[in-house]
Amino acid sequence: MKGGGALLLVALSLLGTRLATGEDNNEFFIDFLQTLLVGSAEELCEGPLGKYDVSTDAKAAVTKLKSCTHGLQPMHKAELVKLLVQVLGSQDDA
Image (tube, rainbow, N blue to C red; front, side, top):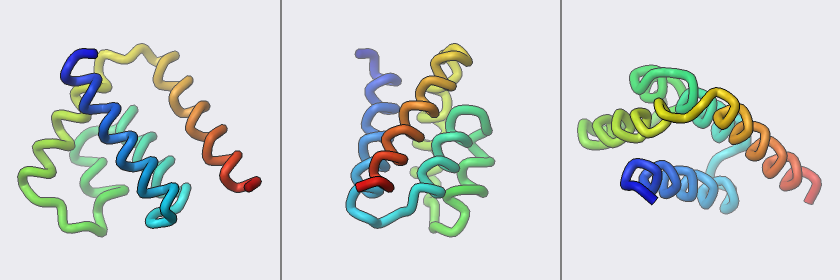
């Protein structure tokens, strides 16, 4: 896996871990993912991450992470969202 893809995987894994431990709710996770896939880095920092103190280095990392999603085909983005909605829905049932 290339560096950009690995970075995206790590970020999604970290968010998933936070979600699984109850630190964040499903709405935050979906909002973050949706903004990551279709929004800008600025929208990501001002929207889902807006209530957090996002350092300059973290903003640079978000910008790099956002650049990883530019190469995804729209159908792949849609499938990622569907998959995560399915996963989050199954957690609600548990």
